[in-house]
Image 1 (cartoon, each protein chain N blue to C red):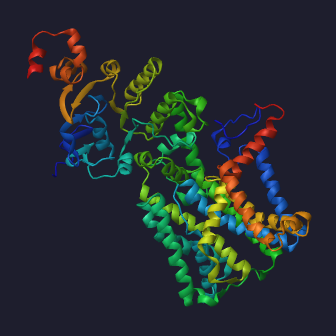
Image 2: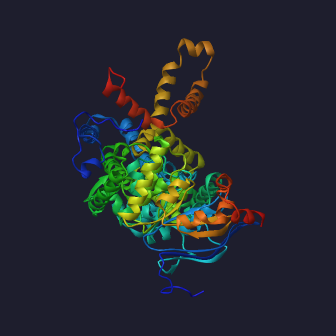
Image 3: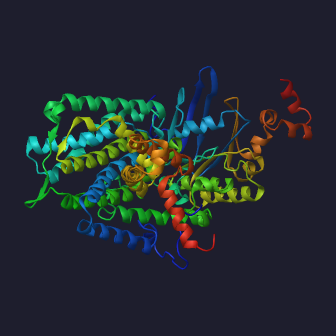
Length: 357
Length: 278
């Protein structure tokens, strides 16, 4: 328990630099690189359906990472995350449609605009905690949702808005096969940035605020600043994810960014692991792929003996929704630390096999 | 009011500090000075206001009236985080480590006000010199880890450590602030004899070799009398004595307030008897 990683025998660190790398061992780094290389090759042999799933994991994963910085690392709570995601989507489309700024620049600019909005809604966070903060962020959710529906100039109102595809040097990333690379690059970059943040001064300060805010303040950490900043950072990631979503679908409608979507983001980081960078991605993948898995199972189930015996018929579709709920509950009961923790245990098991210590 | 800059040469000065919580007077007109390089102890019975006094120094509480000065500056209205950057560090009576962080990260948090990198430069790590800065500070933090002999737990999660080790990590974190004035709130509470001896040695070393001015609250009279240069005694929020350990120990009011039982055993004949009647 004391050490979180298993360092192979004889792998001694000889400098502080080699002790603060992102990946604890060379093998783990090589595996990560291999993973990215495999993903780079993915469009060559995956069909549109799977690419779509991966793209979804990508942009939702970026937004989930933002929420994890806020909830998992800083110990705040937000149930208005999807509103920031939506704001990023609209902002990017608006910047492009209204001002003609090229899309590649709109995406980060939209993220910055979302940051500003997030900071405004983060101001109460400096004073509120726990349930009170949850309600304050709920207000953010509804205010922004209402804003989306009414601000015709910004969002196109109830009709929604068109978002142009990303173009770079005359090449339009308007297919799943090409847009996959855009999302992949953004995702890798954002995850590396977040990892770096968490191993430097301000990342530690955020965790300190979470673990013991009184002693954090005595250690010279300005609580107001860091709590507001956490909201800003979280909104930045959400806006980035939202902008990527907008230019992928090329259409943004006001209906999508509901509180249910916000709760789904919370589900992703709880399942993935609060306070874990990679956990955010694992949880997102889980939440995106779980409905597909359930779909597959229920399709396989329909028409079988079980289906006929229980007389399920249309109920099969609802079975899927229920199963998702059950899986989440099971997770909370048996693996509250999330997939990231489970993954560590699996790694430890195989590394030590067949000895248990 | 404008009593400020050059008037006082003491490292720390409290002037008529009073602290009230509703009707409860935690501190009443406490004044004292701490000179640079001193090892200053505050003692007194439970509830005497020792921790309240330390909280007034570190900024956790703001005195209801009176002022506190640090290096001649009026710091009464400063936030705790600002005071940390001026060079006031502290440990807590009840452990206040960041439980889910590693020991190393806990101590690195102490470097907060000395580090320059922020969320932007920190995120870009390699490109902005943040890495170089972090590693330079890591080097200094390792000195502290060496000094307090916690090398073996450097990568352990702070929340999993034993009580004695946690106390030591907390001290390390406070030392990492590079404070000029370090406030130790019961650094030896709940420790066995051996751990106490170690801790006393660390405190003396901090004072003599690292040149820190130490303010310590401690109940173990043996330790207090052994290592303190000066002692202040509080009772019911009032200062009842201040001076060298011997002088304080000999003070009849102190005997009555704090060391009463010992006093009976010794049965000092006349002086204390009268004091007790009065």
